[in-house]
Image (cartoon, rainbow, N blue to C red; front, side, top):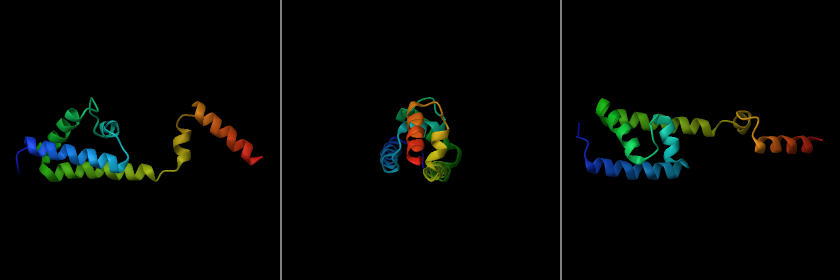
Length: 104
């Protein structure tokens, strides 16, 4: 297994930033999945580094693939489920009123 070094960290940072952009996600989204204390890239990299040390590149790849799979799954969930999660939101109330008006 290749040792973690500055070059790997730089390449991984660039790859993650590009991946997040393509996925339409932010570092904050990645933070939530990795359960890190911050959404700053150095903190995220420390978490990924720990995954790398616990199982090498295959472990790191599995973690990132699991994240992408979870994001893809959430994209396929119906919008109604997201709306129902916060019934007291002003936007949700307005949307419900519009739906009621349209159904009359």
